[in-house]
Length: 129
Image (tube, rainbow, N blue to C red; front, side):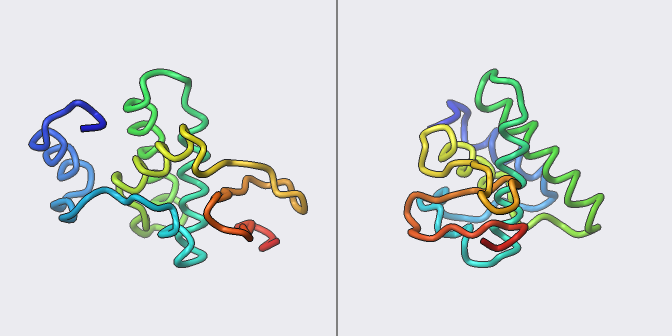
């Protein structure tokens, strides 16, 4: 519903991007999944940074390009598969746009920090403050 594209087109695009079928079930509704592991929080922050670097065009294009950059970076740096799939990136990007999560500077080390309004304490991925 969010993209205006049919489910068949979205499934096909997911398979092309991930070389596997998409998970069943709805898209994530809470950003708390990002905080289940420190690695997932780091990758969520990186994904959010790449989304923000995209020029403000159509949101769908920004998410696609940001996710491609994120995926390429993870593959080149760690030679592993990213922890986030496109659905996760879509949810993070949507939450950034509406203010559920925010990218700020860490007051201790000045790196990018993804903060979640649902949490009282948000941890920096670099200095852990």
